[in-house]
Each structure stands twice: as C-alpha cells, then as structure tokens.
Image (tube, rainbow, N blue to C red; front, side):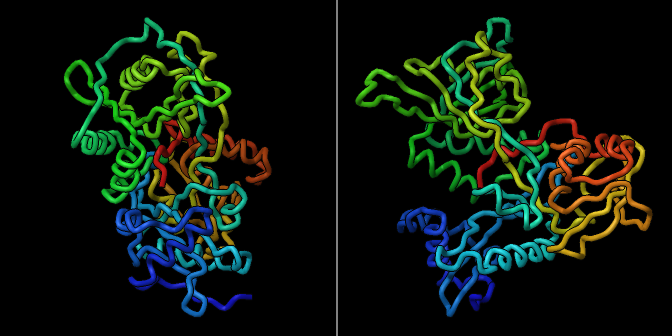
Length: 402
C-alpha cells in the first residue's frame, strides 16, 4: 500500500497537482496561458489532493451548483478532474479522495454530488448511479418541415453579445428539466468564452416575434475533406444548444440545416425525448450514433436529498437503503407525495445507494430497475407506487459539460 495523505493543496501546489491529473487523464500539462484561464476553477477549498512525500499523486475537485430536481432545485457539487498518477493507481487513492469529498459535500450543505464519468465502470462502486442518459446524433442535410410554425428569426452574434447573451438565456431556461445545473461565471469563462476564442465557435440566437431571445446554439464548421475525398464538404459541430420552447428549438435547427456547403451536423448529449426527427422532412436524416450515460448522481446526505425533491401523487412506499461508503445514510425512508422521512416501518423495497441515485431524478422506473435485479421486493404493487412517486414531468438531462 502507498502511504499518502488527502488534503487541500497549498496555493503553490495547485498547478503541479492539476498538471499531474492532466497527465493521468492523457492531456498535456497546462501552458501558462491555459493555467491563467483555468486557475480560477481550482480554488483550494473545493480541491482535494492525495500527496505522497509532498508530491501529488491524485486529485478531485468540485464546483458549487444548483441541480434541477423534480419539484425544484437542490444544492449540489459538480465533481470533475478526478484522477490518479499512473504509477499509483489501484492503491485506494481514489477511494480516499472521493470519500473525503463526499463528507465535505455534506458539511457544506450539498446533499447531492454529480459528475460525468470518463469510464462507466468506476463510479458505481462509490455510490454514484446513472441518473440520466443522452443521445449522440449525426444529422444529414435535410429541411425542417414546411408545416412546422416559424416563431421568430435567427441572428449570428459577434463581439460582446456572443459572450453575454448565452449567459442570460441559459440562466432564464434553467431549470426546465431535472438534471440541469446552474453555470457560474467560472464555467462561462472556461466552457464558453475560451472555446469561442480558441476554437472559433459561432453563436446563433433565436428571437421570437415579440423581440425576446429564447434560444441559442454554439457551433463551428469542421472540414470533412481528406486526400481521398477532397469534396466531402463541411460538417457543423454543435457544442451547446438550449431552447426555451419548441418554436426556438425548431428555429435553431432550421437555421443550422440551411447553412450553405454543410453536408451533416453532429451533436452530442441531447435529451432522449427531444423529437428532432419529427421536425424534419426526412426523419431518417437523424442517426442516433449512441445512447450513453450522461449524468451520474450520488446522494451524499440521503435524508436531506430525499426531502429536497417533489413526488407525484401515489400511496406511500417505504424503501430500505444500503450505503456501505456512507453508513450514516443507511435506513428506511417513507416516500409519499408529501415528502420523505426516516421510518421504522417495514420496507416495501430495498436497494443500494447507487440505484437510488438512478431513481432520484425520475429517469428510471423502479420496476425497470427491479427487472434488472437492482431493486428488490416481493410486492409488485409497491413497485407500481414507486414508479409514480419518483416519476417526473420531463425526461432528465444535464446538457452542461464540466
């Protein structure tokens, strides 16, 4: 076993620690310019490093966000930059880092932690569950159907507007789906401003007939030409697309599909229920390249997390939760349309913490998880009640990389 300590890095240790985790994730160390742009993301108070004889060998960090849940919002930790030096893996470093981080979340009053996983086999053993999925699309050139109403117009932004308008629009649309998170200024500087400057992304905004902006798309052209196929044309890569209503969504796609010299559009991580193919003259133009895990969710303070979301009308159900990593979460909870509370009543369903993370946003049905052996019961009626109670009014989706 490796002897190491987990603690907040000192200020002078921040960059070496980030360089270490960049290498662990197969990225080069940050340049001076990149560090200047990124250092505000890694305050020492929300970053934990694993140190061996003063050298960083592992890291995890998080940002404070609000997470949209059925019935409202809950404070959450958006976890990122989890990694261990290649010669120190499988020695308990990640376990210690993530456990320390979860206790820190509880202490901060953040009952939920969320992340995007680099590998699908890592985080379940730490109590994270796949709370929502997303689809990756390739859209061939076609047109939006003529009978889809035109509710406004699209304009390209430049200069300061390209930096400010998406911020305002995103803030106005959150939280229209469970799983969406707030974006602070640090996120916008790194996740939006930097890519516009570095990668040449463009910003298109939809404005309705009343003159109000109600959606935006951030995209860039990518040449498909190769030596063997010099006339392959151009694809559009969509980085960020948010619409406050169906008219704005259709208007943005109408614009993207009308851009000259474009043969296809690729876009990742769209909501499972987004009906793009129904808007198009040729529905077969939409190819689903993959459906993948999108947002992983961990209940750090289970009683507070359960009490912080709403439930649909149904007869109550008692769940028994096992949480080996955070045994203070163990116990039975009565779930009803009035809320959630601890109870000593007999359990109707039993499940582990990672499975409860899958149920939490309403993206999975308890009966589906039971069929997969993840929820245990002898009462099918209890499963039906849980399906209703945990269900939401919209399919969950995050839509923000972090």
